[in-house]
Every structure is written in C-alpha cells, then in structure tokens.
Length: 537
Image (cartoon, rainbow, N blue to C red; front, side, top):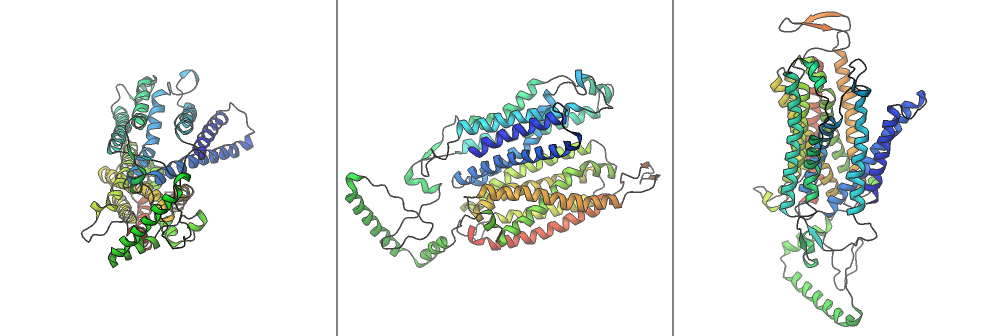
C-alpha cells in the first residue's frame, strides 16, 4: 500500500515537473536542462518500479492455486496494451495540433505532444494512488491468516473480454489512421487540418474499456475459502510433530482458549497420534515423496542471495537477449521499412501488430504455463511441464523471427517476422515474474523481479540496439553523395546518413538469431537447475 501510493505520487510529481521544465514554464539554466530532465526521468522510472514491483508481489503472494499464471498473464497483458491505450486517449483529447491557439505550423513541429505528460500524471494518481489508499489494507491491519476470497472463473472471463476489447480498440484505431493516411479526401495536408477536433467520447470509451472490467471485479461475488480448506490456495503451514524438534523456518499455529486449555492439549495429542498412525500406513514411495517435497521447499532469497545462484544468471542471460531482440524492432522498425523500400505505412502497421502480438503472448503464456503445471497439463510420461520450458519456446520463436526478418524482402514476410518477434518478446515478461517468485521465494519477489525488469531492458537495448544494430547499419551507409538504383531501376537518393538495401539490418538479425539459439541452451540449463521446484507441483 505504501509503495504503490508513494510510487503514484512520485510519478505524478515527476511527470508534471518534466512537463513544466520542458515547456519552459519553469525556467532552468540552459546548462542544467539536460541534467534536470535526466533526474526527473530517473524519478519517473523509480515510481514505475515501486508500483510494478508491488503489484506483482501482491499477485504472486496472494493468488490461489492454479490462478497465479493466469493472473500474472492478465496483468502483463494490460501492461502491454497500456502504451497503446495512452496514445489513443491522448490523440482523442489533445485537440488542435501545432502551436498555441491551434495554428498548425509544420516547420516548428508539434509542441502539444508534451501535453501527454500531465495526462499521464493524472492517471498515476487516479489509477494508482487513490485505489491503493482506498482498497489495500495497511500492513498493520492485515493479518497473516485470514479467510481467502478466491477469484472465480467469471472474474478471469471478464478480464479477458476487457483485454480483447481494449486490444481491438488500440489496433483498430491504428488501422483506421493508416487507412485515412493512404486514402485522404483531398490530400494529406487537408486531412491533418481537419483532424483537430477533441473526441471526448472516444477517450471516455477507451477509459471504460480499460478500467471497466477491472472495477467490475469489485462488485462480483467471490468464493470464500474456509480456514480448514485454506491449504488449497495458500501456503501450507507445517504442523509440529510430537516429540520432534521444530526446524528452522517452521511455525506452529495454535488456537488456545484459556477456559479449555487442558481439553485442547488432549485433542492435540490425539491428532498427533492419528497423524503418526496415518504416516505409518503410507507406502514407502509416498514417504519418500513427502520427504523430498520437504527438502525441496524453496527458500526466499534476497537480491544479493539470488545473484549468487546459477539459476539467476541463466534467467538473466535468456531474458536479456529476448528483451533486446524485441527492443531492436520497436526502436528501428521505421528504418528497416525505409531501407527495404517498403510502403511508409508498413512501419506503424507493423508496430501495431507487434503490440498486439506481444500483449496476446503475455496473456496466453501465463495461462498456458499454469495449465501445464496442473494435472491436466502433464505430458504422456506423467511429468509436468515446468515454466522454464516456455523460455525455450520463446527462444526458438525469437530465432525464427529474426532469421525471417534477415531474409525478408516483401511486406508480408516482414510483417510476419515482426509479429513473431513481438510474440517472443511478450512471452518473457509473465515468465520472469512467475519463475522469480517460484524459484527464489515470494518474500522478496518485488525487488528481485524489478532487477530483471530493469536490467534486461537496459542491457538488451544497449547491447543489441546500440553496439550491434547501429554499427551494422552505419557500416553499410554510402558515405559520399551519389545516386543509386534499386532492383527496379528506381533512383534512390543517398545523403550519406541513410542506409538503403537488404544488408542494412541483415547481419543484425542473424546475430540476434544466433544469440537466441544460445538462449535455448541457457533455458534448458535453467530447466535442469530448477527441476526440484517443479517436479512436485
């Protein structure tokens, strides 16, 4: 509660301050502008980390049995569609484009884009801080053991319908804008001038599609699980056996009434005797399985303890490469389209498809991986499919996507490659949350997950987009001013700054594809190292 409310306020203050400084409303010494904006950007990221870590810690810690993957996947689906929803809302309410008084000035650009920041600040308070304060209990008031109100299938159906509706709105809006650009009524310039009305109805509709299904869950009935059946969805609290020393980390739950303490003690002795008799009747195989289960209990590790394990670095390498492969596409898709000589509308269409593919992958990966861990998901050998196995699938998908993009020369092949890359990119985000929580414990899952969330994107983008893609791209630029001809003898102007041709990104795609193969190996190694976590699921 504290982390989310603080994160929302910090994010709103940072965004508004960034807007005031960048628009010149708050004067800052010219030499300090970059430093000030950079510090505000760091504060914005910290606020996002506080909120994201808290949200997924709540989900991992309090989800019922068989619901964790589905809940994380749905949450990650909303994260994937969030940027598209923000963009659609802002385009609907921004009003006349251009400078003050609505005068369109194409030479000076579009300063009104900065008005996105106050809108984002409003949602940071309205959608994060206020719900956290009103709906979440403080740590002081929340007990360790309570009756658990588990979500029903109806809750998840509504969430999925909301995701489908929001995805349809985001992708549909992008497609309609592309169609309007390709088929203007009287030229593109006139189209831009006429598209200056505030469409409040569209903004309200998107907000309802975004928050309506989530808010409706508060009003739906939930199944209440009694304390006697609580072990079905909450961690089992081990019971101390008679005559055995309590081991480290175990807790004993007793309910003692002063008026009947002796009776309670007698009942406990009877229960212990029954448990011992029941244990004697168990087969040797069942006793071995229970003993192995107790030995394989996952300990909650702090961030420093986690980084001392081999599993942590295997997961980090896999997710860093796959995340970097996704950011390669989002950062360079426009240049890729330009270098291949494809239609300019291919770039925004590809980005819309990338967004939809990665959002769908987030939702489906969480649900399918949860199903694979259940009894229904057992393979023909009767063995459950562990979550790291889906990292193997994502690695193969990333390899296939970039290999196809490296060979693509047509719009169809390019768009398919982008969509496949988006799917591989989207799969890693719910898997990171779930694997971190299951392999390193739920006590510190917020901090541990945020390490992966930040480091994988930062290092992956720096490693692949900066050191690989940029170097390959610049090495194929024709340095001198000249005129070349493409395969259709169509002249192409060369300015010494832009690369044209298949080779501009081909080597980069092949390098990412090769690194994705290494992710297959690291994912298989992670499966082996974490087999004890999932073999008794």
